[in-house]
Image (cartoon, rainbow, N blue to C red; front, side, top):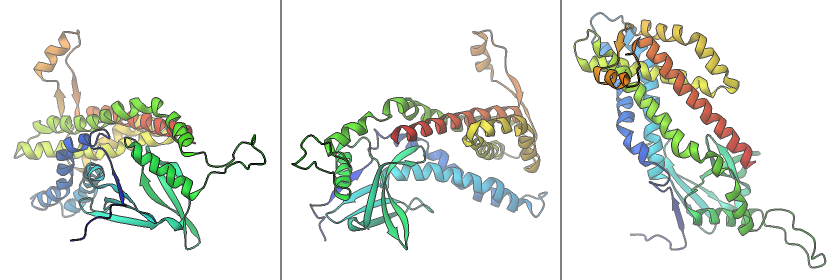
Length: 341
């Protein structure tokens, strides 16, 4: 059996400090979303009164979105478990979940001699990453590495790699008063890196992202609870109908990522008819609902009347709230990228 080379250095995410434990807690929700396409296809195929095109329609417009939502939860957890960066003397590699099926890990590797420049604060969605740039077929491409922000030795390794690729300029002896131009020394660069926007986005990282995940789970669970009153053969089918509707509406919430609040304005005027159209296509009625007696007693302490609403109204307001949360997160990510630049 081959023993690992002691000269290799390995770095991984911290499961607790990097908050991957939240994805582990929500994994059952992701697995349910992954199973919905197959349950829908089999259930709609056996339906007596459903038209012939309905199983395919349900699979495309409900099953695939559900599968993609489940993929987000599964991939995010596997990213925390699988991701490992390995440094050798002349190459660096990264182990990641496979994009198509994240249960399977894959390994990517690049020789350090191919790297021409490095970006220690590259924009990577709502996060920052390290991009190693190289040329392939006369085009500049990048090799992705994560930023393990809770791993100081890894950050020091990144700075050492940066100095190896772009050596700092040392002032000549003939001009001792001249200031060096180019890449700063490792200690100075580390100090500068710590000054960047961690304080302004700490609330977003620690509070807001869990709030978005909780909002999605709450919308899915409440939507399924509302549709329990549907006259179906089983409560499971009724709950699955509301759960599936919430998954479709979850994709409408991505309007919040559109710049300038355009998506929110469009959803405000078009959200109700779009949601009604979705209910009509999947043949789910717009059922009435009201808050449970226990909740009404709690609301009565603050002189709040019991809530009486419809499924469409709930999906509209729940989607709007999540869309606003997406908008705030995108603004925070934009501010972070500007601060890094």
